Length: 440
Image (cartoon, rainbow, N blue to C red; front, side, top):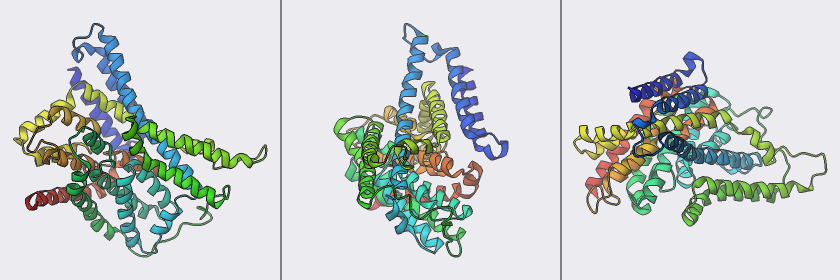
């Protein structure tokens, strides 16, 4: 009964988030309420879910704190990445991206955004890539209606680009670190399916764009940021910011520290460097692009939305709902890997894909040979489906949640206009992978 109540609260909260534009209640408020309500119900009788502990209440509190710690690593990563991108952007570091995307043709801009997002998300994480592209897009596109189309493609491109790269998405990093996939084979087998999953929606989305691209009003969005730094200082900021973001996976590999530690290292170095650059200012003078000033630009509503969603999902994980769901999928599919991973990908558009992949890694042990071996079909499909499947709903991935918060995209608009296209791309990529297996 208690498990049913927790699931009912989660479903009700999810429906309210989906109908935000109808009920006129901010999704962040709903997500936080859902988080607290789920764990409150859990604490009414924690002994149902916790066995073998001398002190059930103490074990329950430790469980909540542990999940909060795991969630906080994502939140700190997000805050650090958003701040780094903001610092680099405000100092003109991403001008080269803007210049590479600039065109008067709406359809050309769509394809440039698609491939730029896809490539960047394979090098940087898809969260950071989405933030960078949104910042640049705001300086290129004046029409909100057009920008929504580009925003949707950024979500799709970021998730597709992250799916084939071992450092491009949290789930691929998990599978890579867990020894389920290797970097070379992941790229070899998943690059083309991931690319197809992005190209198919882009082909269909281009028909929603017609005519010439209108430039952003210079009076509203200045072409160049305030000239607080010299040219070489701006280049230094760019190298530290973007180079640092690319270094984060390497830092994790060398130190085994979580990704947020690498992000905070990059942010601290960037902060110290810019403070030294601004040291020449006289007393009383201020620099609007100092990190301390730019911290106020962080979208806390998006951060808190992440907190609510991830903590609510963690409650479902602790009561065994996600594990039971995985076992049920395995049973009804008869062991069909394409069906199981395909359904997991669809589910990952509803709930966070990290606990789903973690559940699969615990549920299906690594085999010495066959489909469950290292670089086996199951693990490669899981990497693809968990990454690309998140594009089917706007809240199905970290990239989608960030774009939704930054650009104020409604759940209903995305569901109606983009979900069918993302689903087609998702299935087309799986078909491509199946054909590859037949050929290879």
